[in-house]
Image (cartoon, rainbow, N blue to C red):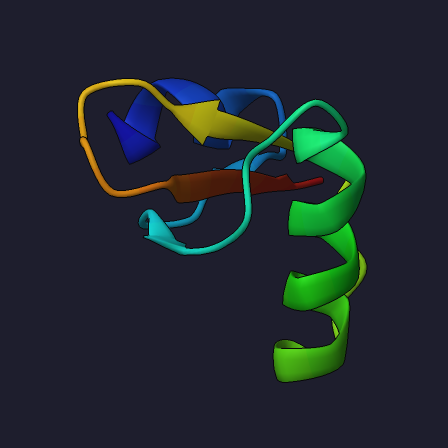
Length: 59
């Protein structure tokens, strides 16, 4: 799947444990930024996992 996004200059990061709640995206972005020192363009909750995981995109 990374190849498809690479055309747009985006990288789909692997899902990582995060807080996905009502404000899921913001919490994911904050957590990702503090851990990796990269500000992702967008994060979303990964619905396939029962535990709450985020998937972020870096463009």
